[in-house]
Amino acid sequence: MKKAPADLAVLFADVTGSMSLYEKLGNARALECIGLCLSIMRQSVKTSGGRVIKTIGDELLCVFPTAMACAQAAVDMLSRIDMQAPVAGQPLQIRIGMQFGPVIHEGDDVFGDCVNVAARMVKLAKPMQIMLAGECIQAMEPGLRSQARAIDKLPIKGRAKGVDVYELPWKHSEDMTTMASVPPEELQQKPRVRLRLTHNGREIVFGARQDVIRFGREVSADVVVSDRKASREHARIERRRDKFVLVDVSSNGTYITFRGEPEMPVRREEIVLHGQGSISFGHPYAIDPAEVATFEVETLT
Image (cartoon, rainbow, N blue to C red; front, side, top):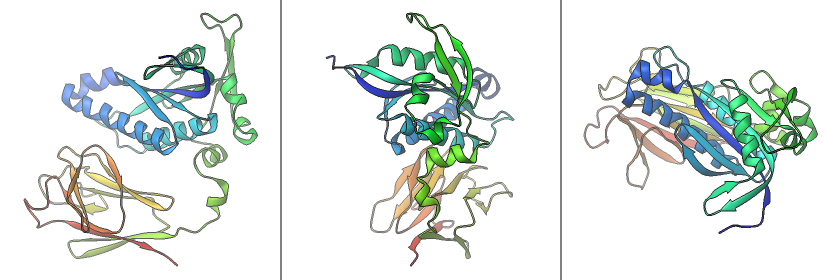
């Protein structure tokens, strides 16, 4: 059933270099890598208040109520994908296209000129680049709008006039990243939580000066896990403002137990840590409780 058009921001995100991943890694491992990218993108959409419309192969189509929320998701996606370790020497990369304007809903899908333009923008983008049309730029706040760089004016099929095309820098623009991902007032606040980890008798306090702790069998990991069912690069915990997020990147998964709750598997996904609990690497805790990490999220006064 069609609904009246509503103004929304539309974002297409596409995993780039997927053919090369299949050639280098084979089908199973390449699918894991692409699945990881899609999982990260979906989480960024959810965190920014958007909605995933559909997945088309290795591409995501989603909508947001505002252009600012769309930009926040785009920057979050790129920042988190950029943190992933290269696979077989190849970095995981995505590209993003955005537009803002009237969108027609039909069933669970969206249509219209806005969607078509966003689809064209993602095809223009290079790996790890955000491309967007003029209407999307105009719908943003002045501070973020000023960060955009005009690229060209291109003809679009079905449009009488061409579309103004812009790039939205993200990686080397501190102002842009700040505006897109963190409300300015939050930057002035001191962190209100810390994470206390214990593993093999070693205690680690994850405070304000650290952004990530990595777990795995590699000796370069922050926490070296000797269990053979653990992956070389198994998981990490990221600080995201006042939250600690466990991100699994392993083959066999990570198993987490919050105090008083049943154990749950996390496979190529992420979960926010809270309270107290334990983490097992590569198998459920009951199979082999010999090596486990315990955690406690503490509120600071």
